[in-house]
Amino acid sequence: MIVVAEIGRTEVISLLIEKGADVNSTDRWGRTPLSDAHGIEHEEICKILKAHGGIDPMGLDSLTPCYEIDFTEVNMKDGTLIGEGAYGEVYLVKWRGTEVAAKTIRSSIASNEMVKKTFLKELALWQKLRHPNIVQFLGVLRHSNRLIFLTEYLCNGSLYDILRKRGRLDPPTAVAYALDIARGMNYLHQHKPHAIIHRDLTPRNVLQDEAGHLKVTDFGLSKIVQEKDFGYKMTGGTGSYRYMAPEVYRRESYGKSVDVFSFALIVHEMFQGGPSNKMETPEKVADRRAYEDSRPIMSSYIYPEPIRMLLRECWHKNPECRPTFEDIIVQLEMIQQGLQLKNGMGACCACYIL
Image 1 (cartoon, one colour):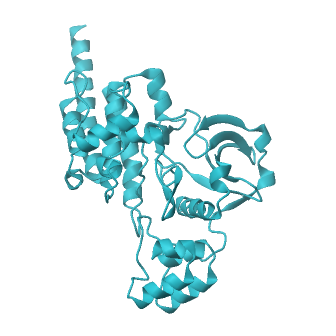
Image 2 (image 1 turned 120 degrees about the vertical axis):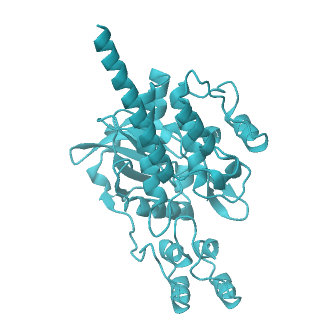
């Protein structure tokens, strides 16, 4: 029903309703067929759905669901290229005297109206989110022949950059970073009325602010690929395979636990200093995890036992056995307290010896 509403097939919508289809079925973002009909501005389908009790919990009745910024307020020509992702480039620009990040969507993607509307709906949801560990969305540039949106600029780069420069992190830092990510993800998973699943949680999608805290970004904005029967589908880029949960790789149904699996792999890399299987292609790694239950090796010399236990739970082959981020936060806080106590006792012993 939702796919049909997004495509704009009036006759199919009528037939589905006649056959008893649920007019208020929801997707993983909490959108209903009416939400998508509003998104593509299809008045006829909106009328049909409303006449049969259709509701729009996302409140996308407005023709401009995203906060729009006049294109003249940002000089893209003076922008500095600071990154390139699966769906476009990222520039450092100034908006009203403040440095912000301008993320562009590739013309090959943005030229498709249906795809463009899909991105705008993702951004409309993003702009409602407020949390210290979530990158703040600022708005979409208006009157642009390209699809460009602005977010806050985090000058310290991504967790990927941090690991590439510093290598293995000390346990207190790794646990503090893990808590930042877990808190941001817990906020997304507890979003009302429906949870937000990231599905592309990787070190490149975790950024660091000036205070040293990490923030999650780019949820729901993965690479778009065309599929034969369903128009366009959101998927992760090639590099994302390394952090992909087995059920996603196998194209099975999945839920919030896919983000928990990816989170565990990120925490593993913080203690390890990077991927433990760099010589293998991301696709090969994902294939072995999905079909051979392969998991990273954790040395007791590097990983504290509580961390090893937590990671094993998070990448359990049964998604229903993985903990929630709410549970993960509780465990990480206990681990953090233990590390602080251990370091404090070590300092006291050192002073006594001296």
